[in-house]
Length: 404
Image (cartoon, rainbow, N blue to C red; front, side):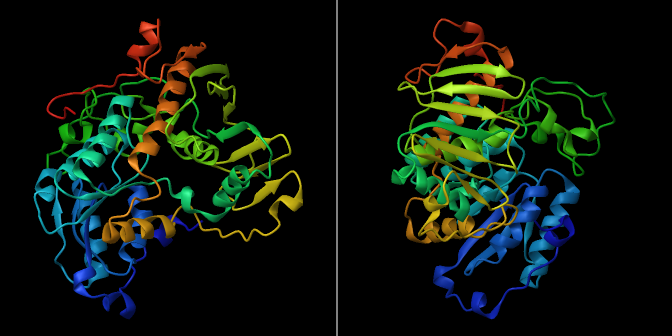
């Protein structure tokens, strides 16, 4: 894992990248220059035939830093910095966006971008509610845009190996899967911080920063990372579940469905069950590293995580497998695939419909976890039948003018 300082180092365009014919150039822009974008922007900049034209952030210092990063790489001062994403989306010369804002903006920005004819690579979670996720999925279908969610472990070798073992039959009938939930319970509630003087709009556009979430007084802690502890801004179990639940569903071949029964066990564990009885264990503890998954079958098990290691019940299970690993902080395969799909118009490996259903599982689990009671979920209606209180918790704020 590279240090934060290493992630900030400028990267220069190579001769091979500069030689890509202009007709194949993919023009891009970024929205949201936080910590994740600082990790990923050098990866996107380094893709052959990719040229960044613009950046957007509601915070002045981040706008300036993003523009400098792009200008330093391009060797000029041509990158345009915007505070309002709508001005950026109006540009016809931009093919695709990298969206790396806080969670509350992911769905709305993705939909607006696809409506404007842009392809989208968006960090996870793709949405803060089931309704938002469905709207992202429908927009991708309606506008025929390439959508790639930032669940990069779908393309990381050790995770691919584990999923292949499960789908190959080597484990026998898979009966239980485990999804690591490192941030479980991180944002169960909201705590309004003391109001501080609101900076000028060119320093931070507070109304735009809040987005569709309920308005609250300004406090600098929110914008410096404190939003992760606030449920209005954060998806709780979607933080890690958008990776690990997604990987489990992909391994099971159940990308377009979700569990229908959710049973909280403790502060650190919840069990979910598919209609046929297959069990998913969402748990915070007991793994060796972050973003772990464990797949258990009648004839063996496999487990892997961000360390790159693959653990198995029997070493023979790994015969014939060569494991490729790359750091989750600056993965190359996943964004490279997105750029290739922008050119080819082929479906990306982390499309909106598959990610929507893994998020459905996370949203339903979050409600059961917060209420601390067993819930039955209806996939047809996306509600908890007979439980009005639980069903209401599936709905998120839709503050004007940022309506879906």
